[in-house]
Image 1 (cartoon, rainbow, N blue to C red):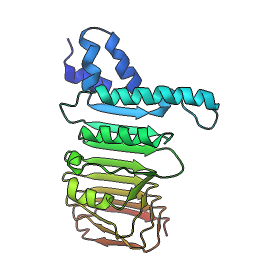
Image 2: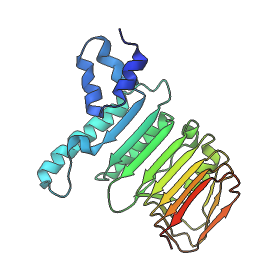
Image 3: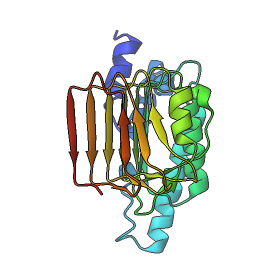
Length: 237
């Protein structure tokens, strides 16, 4: 008989609907999906296409997707922290997406990936900082980071090592400072800083830095890069 840990490893490679479907295999498998260490909510698993779907067909598919995602998070075992939470979706209903993000973060994941597929940037909801205590890797795409992101990164992510922001916006009316004593890899791709202040990066343990294709009206200030081994900087204003 395979141990639960090995089964969970196998489940982590499957799309979420397939993971849940394993509950019909036997009595033992009935609840294994609830303790899987990875939760991935991906609209592509439901073949949603905003470009070619008729309105009624889109409504049906999106309703199925919302129902599945909501129940997946509702019934997942929350007695232990999560290895990875990933959300890949357009914002068709912001209330649902906010709720999924809040629920996923409540599991204190080590890896958090939020990929918003809309052309417009999704405003990151306010979250409880204590839920980031295990977070080592963060990926955000097409997210408006607001004015609280830098403070959250500094004060609530004590073990963060890997941060990648793609097509994200630093907003607000104050300076944004990316600072972390543990961060080793930082990638900012096609990001925008609209605060009117320079983006300040102070990361003494950083080994790899990538800045590409962004717009930083007031520039970028880099400090304390003593551990930097490799840097890629190009294509931004």
